[in-house]
Image (cartoon, rainbow, N blue to C red; front, side, top):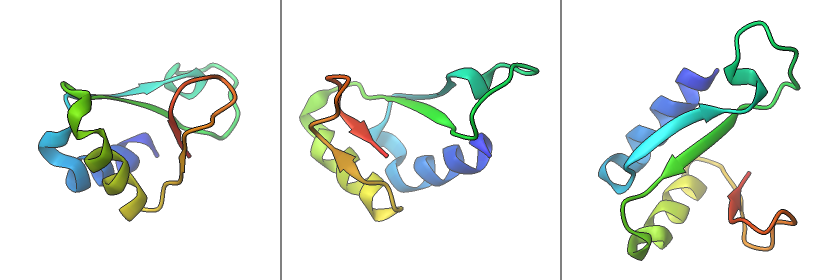
Length: 75
């Protein structure tokens, strides 16, 4: 599932992102995990964050600025 998500994100965002990683329990083979794929996207410059947010929204993710863990989040 991660590879499909990664391809979709890279296809939409292209050069807007610096790195994309599969993180969390589903990234560890053999570890019991909830069926949620955690993806971390790194950008080189926060000046283009609106472009990244918009691109993720285009492929169906929802931006939640007021995420309770105090980080910006797309779900």
